Image 1 (cartoon, rainbow, N blue to C red):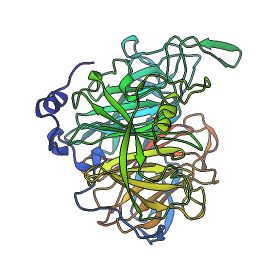
Image 2 (cartoon, one colour; image 1 turned 90 degrees about the vertical axis):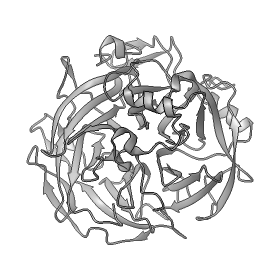
Image 3 (tube, rainbow, N blue to C red; image 1 turned 120 degrees about the horizontal axis):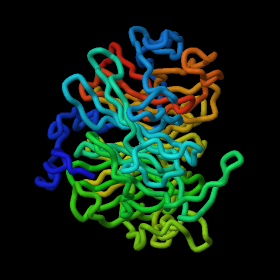
Length: 470
């Protein structure tokens, strides 16, 4: 991978004290909230009026009534599955994690994951950006003009990977794309009437530069496990990682040998909350726990002692690592690492945790009391206005984007009304329950980007934002 100017700056300074302005991005673009504006609560989320009632708004691209939004907000869809990419490729489906990796004036660059497995078409990227040719997952890089409110272009930037679920931006202007499955070289899988054999192992993190294509080389030091999302502490270069495994999951960090150059490797570790081996249930909101870290001796060993796919997790738990369940979204901001446990908590409807590197502590910040309040929080991002956006991934008939104020007030910000009849992109179905993913803000905070996993498209939302909300 070609070393970009922003990466060279990071390596030269060691990353210490690096702010978002070092690469020309606002704090929101890196998932950072304003310093000191911490989300906090003494209990479960409480109802909040937010921006007021929602009403159906028509898409400025297609003219279709796809979303419910508060008064004054508008949106445009872009980057639909099946639309042409540069290089005679078609845009894949299953739009998942996404982040802003660069900005040049009004033009914002995003990288978007596609959670595709094996594919009859195989890789959708050029050979240099392909890891395993039979696999159809990967990333698409998009440029969006915030002044005109429209997509400029999109191109393939990584493929030959599988189930690229979420990931995260880096302070040096790249995207970490995470595979959510563990597979060995030589394993086979069927799709339709065909059997495919994997030429390469899977379960890794890949880095995609904002100004080019990925080199399709896994970052083995970040582990071979069922990755979900990643974020980077800009002051230290430490990468934090979530693991999406139901019933039992670990929370990880990779301390790099050279901050800003993940190909140089580092030390993978699992979080241990002192005196709390099991954090899935029976946790009091607000309680602070001291944190230690357990070394993972073999980060590239994806297989466990029973031949399963929990080899990294097995090593961490053997050393005393703490158990979560189904860890998903993660974001760094206000000096803390915020992450979600989608089905954690006594009601099994979700937890929001915050780890503070400064004093090595962990706090359960929020817990949903039931599906009517918040069900399965997934991807998250901090807003420059002090709150948090939460993507819901549940079995509810209608999916929602939530806002959470810095004081803990929870409100519904956006509701899906996606029902398509074949026009204009050929999709015919009721998609109102499809998963939201990939929320992120433009550097100036005016646009909120997010993805619809199915049938596969992105939205850009703008409107009368207010301080203290999102």
